[in-house]
Length: 259
Image (cartoon, rainbow, N blue to C red):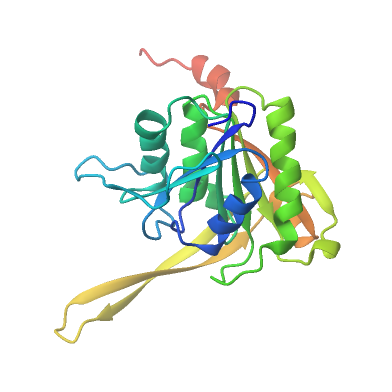
Protein backbone atom coordinates (compact mmCIF):
# COMPACT_ATOMS: atom_id res chain seq x y z
CA UNK A 1 0.00 0.00 0.00
CA UNK A 2 1.13 3.55 -0.66
CA UNK A 3 2.57 5.01 2.52
CA UNK A 4 1.57 8.61 1.79
CA UNK A 5 -2.13 7.76 2.11
CA UNK A 6 -3.56 6.99 5.56
CA UNK A 7 -4.54 3.40 6.26
CA UNK A 8 -8.20 3.22 7.26
CA UNK A 9 -9.92 0.18 8.81
CA UNK A 10 -13.68 0.01 8.19
CA UNK A 11 -16.19 -2.16 10.01
CA UNK A 12 -19.84 -2.12 11.11
CA UNK A 13 -22.56 -4.20 12.76
CA UNK A 14 -25.15 -4.33 9.95
CA UNK A 15 -23.01 -6.65 7.83
CA UNK A 16 -20.53 -6.19 5.01
CA UNK A 17 -23.24 -5.81 2.35
CA UNK A 18 -25.25 -3.11 4.17
CA UNK A 19 -25.74 0.15 2.23
CA UNK A 20 -24.34 2.12 5.17
CA UNK A 21 -20.92 0.49 5.09
CA UNK A 22 -20.84 0.62 1.29
CA UNK A 23 -21.30 4.41 1.56
CA UNK A 24 -18.56 4.63 4.18
CA UNK A 25 -16.18 2.66 1.95
CA UNK A 26 -16.92 5.04 -0.93
CA UNK A 27 -16.10 8.09 1.19
CA UNK A 28 -13.00 6.63 2.86
CA UNK A 29 -11.55 5.52 -0.47
CA UNK A 30 -11.25 9.21 -1.40
CA UNK A 31 -9.13 9.79 1.71
CA UNK A 32 -6.87 6.78 2.15
CA UNK A 33 -6.17 3.11 1.59
CA UNK A 34 -9.03 1.02 2.90
CA UNK A 35 -9.22 -2.37 4.59
CA UNK A 36 -12.73 -3.59 5.31
CA UNK A 37 -13.34 -6.31 7.90
CA UNK A 38 -17.03 -6.57 8.67
CA UNK A 39 -19.50 -9.21 9.85
CA UNK A 40 -20.84 -11.61 7.25
CA UNK A 41 -24.34 -11.11 8.67
CA UNK A 42 -26.16 -8.47 10.77
CA UNK A 43 -24.77 -8.20 14.32
CA UNK A 44 -26.79 -5.28 15.69
CA UNK A 45 -27.01 -4.77 19.46
CA UNK A 46 -24.09 -7.15 20.08
CA UNK A 47 -22.35 -4.57 22.24
CA UNK A 48 -18.76 -5.53 23.06
CA UNK A 49 -19.33 -9.27 22.63
CA UNK A 50 -16.41 -11.41 21.46
CA UNK A 51 -16.29 -14.99 20.22
CA UNK A 52 -14.52 -17.35 22.63
CA UNK A 53 -16.50 -20.61 22.41
CA UNK A 54 -16.65 -20.96 18.64
CA UNK A 55 -14.39 -20.73 15.62
CA UNK A 56 -13.96 -17.58 13.55
CA UNK A 57 -13.85 -17.57 9.77
CA UNK A 58 -12.54 -14.94 7.37
CA UNK A 59 -13.54 -14.73 3.74
CA UNK A 60 -11.64 -12.47 1.38
CA UNK A 61 -14.19 -10.85 -0.89
CA UNK A 62 -12.01 -8.57 -2.98
CA UNK A 63 -8.77 -8.83 -4.89
CA UNK A 64 -5.63 -7.11 -3.61
CA UNK A 65 -5.63 -3.44 -4.51
CA UNK A 66 -3.58 -0.41 -3.65
CA UNK A 67 -6.78 1.21 -2.40
CA UNK A 68 -9.26 -1.36 -1.02
CA UNK A 69 -9.21 -4.86 0.47
CA UNK A 70 -12.36 -6.45 1.85
CA UNK A 71 -13.00 -9.37 4.19
CA UNK A 72 -16.14 -10.75 5.79
CA UNK A 73 -15.88 -12.30 9.25
CA UNK A 74 -18.17 -14.80 10.94
CA UNK A 75 -17.81 -13.02 14.30
CA UNK A 76 -19.01 -9.90 16.04
CA UNK A 77 -18.00 -6.31 15.22
CA UNK A 78 -15.39 -6.40 17.99
CA UNK A 79 -14.05 -9.70 16.61
CA UNK A 80 -13.67 -7.95 13.25
CA UNK A 81 -11.45 -5.25 14.73
CA UNK A 82 -9.37 -7.71 16.72
CA UNK A 83 -8.72 -10.04 13.81
CA UNK A 84 -8.02 -7.11 11.49
CA UNK A 85 -5.39 -5.67 13.82
CA UNK A 86 -3.71 -8.95 14.75
CA UNK A 87 -4.04 -11.07 11.61
CA UNK A 88 -4.70 -8.95 8.52
CA UNK A 89 -3.05 -5.57 8.81
CA UNK A 90 0.71 -5.31 8.51
CA UNK A 91 0.74 -2.14 10.59
CA UNK A 92 -1.61 -0.29 12.92
CA UNK A 93 -4.16 1.70 10.91
CA UNK A 94 -4.22 5.47 11.14
CA UNK A 95 -7.98 5.40 11.72
CA UNK A 96 -10.86 3.01 12.30
CA UNK A 97 -14.35 4.04 11.19
CA UNK A 98 -17.44 2.02 12.01
CA UNK A 99 -20.86 2.31 10.36
CA UNK A 100 -22.69 3.96 8.85
CA UNK A 101 -25.21 2.37 11.18
CA UNK A 102 -28.82 2.06 10.04
CA UNK A 103 -30.38 3.74 13.07
CA UNK A 104 -29.35 6.04 15.89
CA UNK A 105 -26.69 5.19 18.46
CA UNK A 106 -27.32 8.26 20.59
CA UNK A 107 -27.79 8.34 24.35
CA UNK A 108 -27.93 4.96 26.15
CA UNK A 109 -27.94 3.12 22.81
CA UNK A 110 -24.15 3.52 22.72
CA UNK A 111 -23.95 0.79 25.38
CA UNK A 112 -25.70 -1.81 23.23
CA UNK A 113 -24.30 -0.76 19.88
CA UNK A 114 -22.09 -3.13 17.92
CA UNK A 115 -21.13 -0.20 15.71
CA UNK A 116 -19.78 1.81 18.62
CA UNK A 117 -18.25 -1.19 20.38
CA UNK A 118 -16.15 -1.84 17.29
CA UNK A 119 -14.93 1.77 17.40
CA UNK A 120 -14.25 1.49 21.14
CA UNK A 121 -12.25 -1.70 20.56
CA UNK A 122 -10.11 0.19 18.06
CA UNK A 123 -9.60 2.86 20.71
CA UNK A 124 -8.47 0.20 23.17
CA UNK A 125 -5.92 -0.87 20.55
CA UNK A 126 -4.60 2.70 20.46
CA UNK A 127 -6.23 3.56 17.12
CA UNK A 128 -8.07 6.81 16.38
CA UNK A 129 -11.71 5.78 15.95
CA UNK A 130 -15.12 7.14 14.93
CA UNK A 131 -18.55 5.53 14.90
CA UNK A 132 -21.08 6.91 12.41
CA UNK A 133 -24.85 6.40 12.62
CA UNK A 134 -27.87 7.75 10.74
CA UNK A 135 -31.25 8.17 12.41
CA UNK A 136 -32.98 6.02 9.79
CA UNK A 137 -33.57 2.30 10.31
CA UNK A 138 -34.61 1.67 6.71
CA UNK A 139 -32.28 -0.71 4.85
CA UNK A 140 -32.59 1.62 1.86
CA UNK A 141 -31.86 4.76 3.88
CA UNK A 142 -30.48 7.74 1.97
CA UNK A 143 -26.85 8.28 3.04
CA UNK A 144 -26.10 10.84 0.35
CA UNK A 145 -26.79 13.92 2.57
CA UNK A 146 -24.15 12.91 5.14
CA UNK A 147 -21.22 12.05 2.85
CA UNK A 148 -19.62 15.50 2.93
CA UNK A 149 -19.92 15.68 6.73
CA UNK A 150 -18.32 12.26 7.14
CA UNK A 151 -15.39 13.38 5.03
CA UNK A 152 -15.02 16.65 6.97
CA UNK A 153 -15.09 14.90 10.36
CA UNK A 154 -12.68 12.21 9.21
CA UNK A 155 -10.15 14.68 7.82
CA UNK A 156 -10.30 16.73 11.02
CA UNK A 157 -9.53 13.65 13.14
CA UNK A 158 -6.70 12.55 10.86
CA UNK A 159 -5.18 16.04 10.91
CA UNK A 160 -5.49 17.02 14.57
CA UNK A 161 -5.96 13.66 16.32
CA UNK A 162 -8.26 12.90 19.23
CA UNK A 163 -7.41 13.19 22.92
CA UNK A 164 -5.92 9.98 24.27
CA UNK A 165 -8.53 7.30 24.99
CA UNK A 166 -11.36 9.21 23.27
CA UNK A 167 -13.60 7.83 20.51
CA UNK A 168 -16.20 9.87 18.63
CA UNK A 169 -19.85 8.82 18.53
CA UNK A 170 -21.32 10.67 15.54
CA UNK A 171 -25.06 10.63 14.86
CA UNK A 172 -26.79 12.19 11.86
CA UNK A 173 -30.41 13.38 11.76
CA UNK A 174 -32.58 12.08 8.94
CA UNK A 175 -32.57 15.27 6.86
CA UNK A 176 -31.59 16.54 3.45
CA UNK A 177 -28.09 18.04 3.29
CA UNK A 178 -29.38 21.61 3.04
CA UNK A 179 -31.61 21.04 6.09
CA UNK A 180 -28.78 20.02 8.43
CA UNK A 181 -27.95 23.00 10.65
CA UNK A 182 -24.38 22.00 11.49
CA UNK A 183 -22.36 19.99 14.00
CA UNK A 184 -22.64 20.13 17.79
CA UNK A 185 -20.27 18.61 20.35
CA UNK A 186 -22.62 17.11 22.92
CA UNK A 187 -22.94 15.00 26.00
CA UNK A 188 -24.85 11.74 26.08
CA UNK A 189 -28.49 12.35 26.97
CA UNK A 190 -29.87 10.78 30.13
CA UNK A 191 -32.43 8.55 28.46
CA UNK A 192 -33.46 4.92 28.71
CA UNK A 193 -35.62 2.16 27.28
CA UNK A 194 -38.84 1.27 29.09
CA UNK A 195 -38.88 -2.41 28.22
CA UNK A 196 -41.22 -5.34 28.43
CA UNK A 197 -41.38 -8.85 27.04
CA UNK A 198 -44.22 -9.90 24.77
CA UNK A 199 -44.95 -13.48 25.86
CA UNK A 200 -46.34 -15.82 23.23
CA UNK A 201 -46.73 -19.54 22.61
CA UNK A 202 -45.51 -21.76 19.80
CA UNK A 203 -48.00 -24.08 18.07
CA UNK A 204 -46.58 -26.78 20.35
CA UNK A 205 -47.52 -24.75 23.43
CA UNK A 206 -44.03 -23.65 24.44
CA UNK A 207 -43.57 -20.11 25.76
CA UNK A 208 -41.36 -17.67 23.87
CA UNK A 209 -40.67 -13.96 24.20
CA UNK A 210 -40.14 -10.84 22.07
CA UNK A 211 -38.37 -7.90 23.67
CA UNK A 212 -40.27 -4.67 23.06
CA UNK A 213 -39.96 -1.21 24.52
CA UNK A 214 -40.25 2.53 24.28
CA UNK A 215 -37.35 4.97 24.24
CA UNK A 216 -37.82 7.67 26.89
CA UNK A 217 -35.68 10.80 26.93
CA UNK A 218 -35.91 12.27 30.42
CA UNK A 219 -33.12 14.79 29.80
CA UNK A 220 -34.26 18.37 29.15
CA UNK A 221 -30.76 19.74 28.51
CA UNK A 222 -29.97 21.51 25.27
CA UNK A 223 -26.39 20.24 25.24
CA UNK A 224 -27.27 16.59 24.58
CA UNK A 225 -27.11 14.37 21.52
CA UNK A 226 -30.88 13.83 21.61
CA UNK A 227 -31.55 17.57 21.60
CA UNK A 228 -29.11 18.10 18.73
CA UNK A 229 -30.69 15.42 16.56
CA UNK A 230 -34.22 16.60 17.30
CA UNK A 231 -33.24 20.14 16.33
CA UNK A 232 -31.53 19.35 13.05
CA UNK A 233 -27.88 19.12 14.14
CA UNK A 234 -25.28 16.39 13.81
CA UNK A 235 -24.27 15.25 17.28
CA UNK A 236 -20.72 14.31 18.21
CA UNK A 237 -20.24 12.79 21.65
CA UNK A 238 -16.71 12.00 22.84
CA UNK A 239 -16.79 8.61 24.60
CA UNK A 240 -14.17 6.59 26.45
CA UNK A 241 -13.48 3.01 27.43
CA UNK A 242 -12.37 3.96 30.95
CA UNK A 243 -15.60 3.21 32.85
CA UNK A 244 -14.28 4.47 36.18
CA UNK A 245 -16.74 6.79 37.93
CA UNK A 246 -13.99 9.26 38.84
CA UNK A 247 -16.40 11.64 40.57
CA UNK A 248 -17.31 8.90 43.07
CA UNK A 249 -13.81 7.93 44.15
CA UNK A 250 -13.44 10.54 46.91
CA UNK A 251 -16.91 9.83 48.30
CA UNK A 252 -16.21 6.11 48.49
CA UNK A 253 -12.67 6.61 49.84
CA UNK A 254 -14.04 8.56 52.78
CA UNK A 255 -16.21 5.64 53.92
CA UNK A 256 -15.16 3.08 56.49
CA UNK A 257 -14.77 -0.12 54.49
CA UNK A 258 -12.77 -1.97 57.16
CA UNK A 259 -15.17 -2.17 60.08
